[in-house]
Length: 102
Image 1: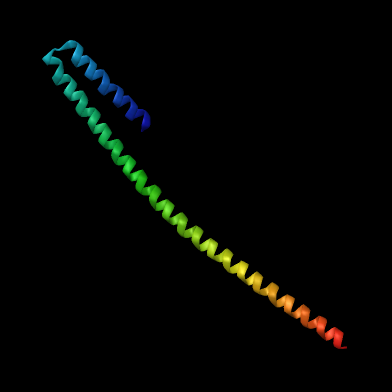
Image 2 (image 1 turned 120 degrees about the vertical axis):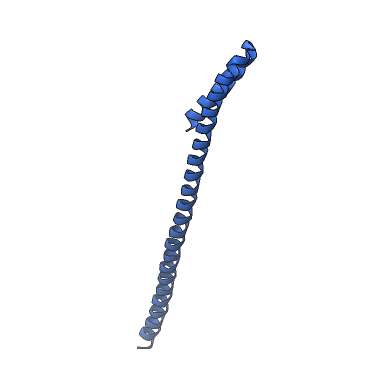
């Protein structure tokens, strides 16, 4: 798309130079037809870019939702590990105290 847009832009510049250099009214109708085709191509490219932009926005949103749920799961696992670690430490302390008693 970028190459097409660049090509069309160069075409507009060349047509402008051609009209300025020739100063012949008969050329204008021919150039208008070319410009019309170029504008149609630009409109089609714009539609494709809008569709791609919409698609990318949807993919980005879905990726964010997926990432959020995965991070939530990681946080839950981390919290469970921290709770288990605390529980193990408390039981170890209790066992040490029991050993000292007996």
